[in-house]
Length: 342
Image (tube, rainbow, N blue to C red; front, side, top):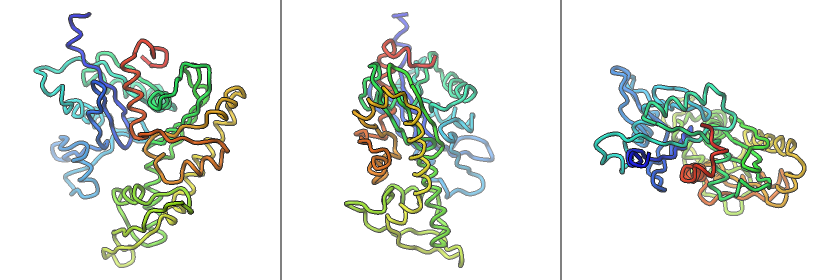
């Protein structure tokens, strides 16, 4: 085996609904939106990642932008496979190779995924030259990425709010004791903002604009200590059909997102209610860890803390916690054998 080791490359992939991240040689080499643009006439993929994201909502009838992943799982098999393939080809170290090396991969998947959806992920990986494919559950990867020692007989609670799903899990002894996967996350927040702008301001805004509003002034609380400034939003007036702009504040966004955040709160409470008492005692002492892009929503940690009466800690780089954990698992495959799904 040793002789052929140089023909094999190790990569860790966080295949997310909103963003795909790839780690190679301990560095994040790909961090791109999970979007592809396809030419409808030739059926060829013309752009992936950032390039395709710029086209979103601005295409004519011959070009279609597709998000191959929905709710954390593959919705468009063909597009996702081509997207993964293009991302892998863009890894700087692999570009220099004369031939495509065999790949040893660790890919993270939502905890509530079915066998069929798992097979779709595995087959996609095998088609892009994945010789050894391991899968790891998202909350596990997030916990490792945050720096939690998951091997200990000690309970830790992780909430990973991504683009398509929110994963809530209690982890102890390298296993998930109880978990819940809810399809309320970043994408739902974005749709809430679109709906709110439509019903309250008669303004029709696109997905990209709503996403920007969420990032710049999104909030989970109507009272913040250092609030963001009001923001002007442009779109189409639903009454006159003319382009128009309106000014909105973070308080309005907090109102728009309220229902979705309540659903996340309820799921957290439900998971806590299923936690064995000894682990509940551990969680009371250590608190709850937040990861994923959704955890960057202003005031969300405070709101969850008020609901659960527990201290809430946000990972230092929440967007990359999951892929970092996947990378660590890849590096120490023997140590983490028990938590990887072969």
